Length: 116
Image (cartoon, rainbow, N blue to C red; front, side, top):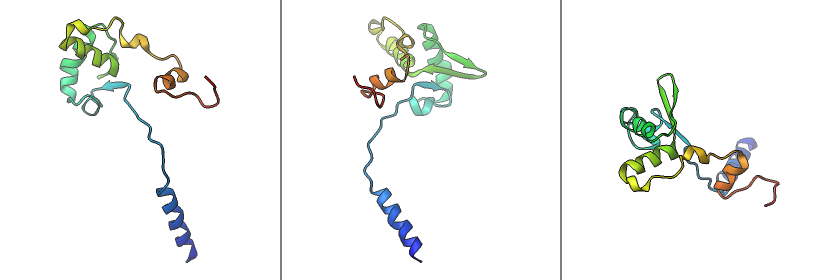
């Protein structure tokens, strides 16, 4: 009978532990994730957004019926469609980080054990 009490005390300690918040942002979007990431249904993504992204020269990967594009490329293409004078000089796909350290640097973090 002492074991259940010990488990509940451990569970209570674990539940009350303060944890740091980590922000997560999607990097790629497809028709399967478009509703969550962009707020539009799959049909609108395939019929309107993918052609707009391709028309601006951004790459769209094709895997069977699945269409996958970078969220940055989609945002840039939609921004250009809305305001043509705000066109970026280089596609977002050219600014892709090369390694983990670059990704963490964009988030304001660094690889554990490395000093700046």
